[in-house]
Length: 470
Image 1: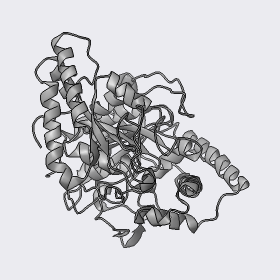
Image 2: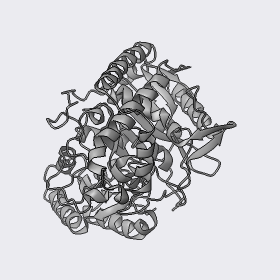
Image 3: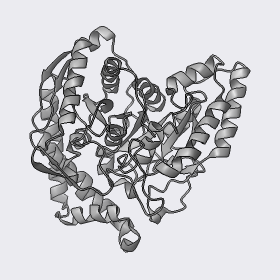
Image 4: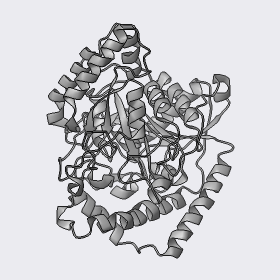
């Protein structure tokens, strides 16, 4: 990775403010990196070269003329192609939206631009975001920069491949069942799934309503926790287009208060086994937080399995019912991954008004139960997934003598979508094949600042970020 494109977003912005780094030079370095690596990775579906170059020139003029600069001034970023960026494709990986171009920026994109960020382009997703890998009939498969025979994850797979490989300094993904956190874990970067409504999902497709508003969020992805913090601060804040929005002010906890929080950790959920290296990564993270001054103890809240089941009733069954009218009659145009998702949904009974109401009530009950348990341990540390990045097309894995199926491997992220809790992933370990392994740090709703500060403490103990060999 070139020296310029391996810098953190925070470092890029600082050097630009000090006139040590030219925004024009920085954007050109990233465009060159994209030209070099995108044929191998297929991370970007559209690169906005000319507009990025014009924005870089304006950013440089602002620096030289002494204008007030935003916290991301001149920093090149990317956006998942399910989020509206004016003039760019927002197709969500489906032929049914082929050629759709956004007419305006989503609020979070507008906020990023106002902070000085420069949008390089938009990145690949699985069709309608319904997979933990990234492939579709519009643009094809995205590859992992650590090993191109493996997936970078999904549904924010193009986004994570761009950031991990140095084609982008940071960006935005979305997450309804792990779609920020699983790719971050697979590709060795950081990602934050916020509380629904903390960062507005306005301008996202599928639209944030109904079960998608309960489960789904948009959030930052970057190579460092410090970058996540800046992206979060810029993007957060209510918007009328997000039904979950609430006016929650940013409040970073005092260092002394942070260390008073007890951290509960668990290596597995008692149902789905994880790889030995994943267990080791959780133990390593727990020890690191102990060295940082936290009280860390084994603790696994009850209610996780119920949460997994309820998540599927909303994301899988209700989500399939919501998307069904759009795709019905177009089965021949759907990608194999999406057809597979529909096959899983077809094996379930469709919701009636009563079953949907029951699911909603059960969700509220289990949330209250989990939150009550977390009075003692307001921060959780656990795996992000059962396995590291898998080979393209794999659907099951043998772990500790048990077969772990595709849908079960990601339950470690799904719980927290159902429960509406913020969660961040930080890379900590490596698999025997040299693939990154992240751990998940989870907090109570609206406590993104606590999650990010704990993640920063873990990152500081872990040491400097290491990029992929590509």
